[in-house]
Image (cartoon, rainbow, N blue to C red; front, side):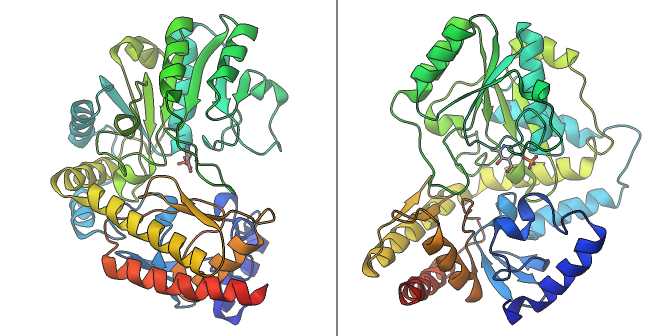
Length: 409
Ligand SMILES: Cc1ncc(COP(=O)(O)O)c(C=O)c1O
C-alpha cells in the first residue's frame, strides 16, 4: 500500500466492518486502483479536490460527471443556500419545480413535459415502464456494455436478480442497426422500447461515436415498428449542448433521460417526452420522498442559466480538444499508440495495445500520485472551472506518467 493514501485505507478498514463492501457500487476501490488511489474525499473547489490524506488533485472525473460548472460553484451554492433557508422537506412541491419544467420544455426540442427524480436509474426504469404502458408490449432492446443504472432490468451484476426480471431485455451491439432488424423480426410486435446513449461509452474500453446513418436507421426501424425510442443522455447531457446531446447527433428521441450534470452536483434526474407519451406518463406511478425538493430544482435552474448565458460548453470542448491532442502527442513521443476517444468534453484515453489494461492502470496510478485524477476504467469529464493552466499542468503530469510507464515495463 502507498503511504500517501494511509488515511483513506484506514477509513476503508473501518468502513468494511460496518458498511457492506466498505464502499459499494462504482466508488468501490476495486473499480479504481486498490492501494494506489484515494478512497475518500474531504472537500472540493473549482477544478480541484482534496482527499482525506490532504492530497490535492486536479479533477478530471468531476464526481463521475455531475460537476459541470466546477465544484462548489458560488452562484449555484448561493441559490441553494437561499432555498434551504426557506426549509427543505415540505408537504408539497414548490414553484421552482414548475419553473424548471417550463425551462426544460422551452430548451429541449422533444420535451412537451418534464418530470423529476433523484438518480438516473429512477428515470431510465420509469421511461421503460412508460414505453410499455404506451405500447402494451413487454420487450426492451438495449446495447451490450451500456450502463443504464443499478435496477434489476439493466444491472450488470446478476446477484439478487431474478431471470424473470431480465427476461424481456434483448441486447444488440452498438453501431449495428442490422441486429435491431433481426431482433424486430424475431420478436415482431413485442418490442416496446429501444434505449440507447447518444454515443457508446462503455467502461474498460474506448468510447465509440455513432457511425454515419446509425441514428437514422434506429429511428426508421422504431417508426416502422411502433417502438418507443428512449435516449439515455444521463452521462453527456448538457455538456455537449444545453439543448441536449440529441441536437449534436441529429437524434429524434421520444423520451429522454437526464441526471448527473443538470444540478452541478445536486441530486436531480429528469425525464422529458413528447406529447403523445403524456397519457402513459400520467398512468405510470412514480414518486419518492425526496423527489420534490425545491433545493435541487433551484440548483438546476441556476446551472442551466449559467450554461445558457456563458460560453462554458464551447470552452469545455476547446479545453477537451487541447487535452486530447496533447495526450495523443505525448503518448506517441513516448512510443505508445494511444487514442483519446469520445466528445472532447468527455474524453477517455486508451492504449491501443493494452489488452490487460496494465499500461492504462500504471498511467493513471502515476498521474494520480502526481495530483492529476484520471480514472483508468471510466471516461473523464472536463468542467467549466478547468483552465488552460490546468490543461498545461495535466499534460506536464501526463508526460511524466508516460515516462514512468515506459520505465516500469
Ligand atoms: C448513461 C447512464 N445512464 C444511467 C446512469 C445511472 O445513473 P445513476 O447512477 O444516477 O442512477 C448512469 C450513471 O453513471 C449513466 O452513465
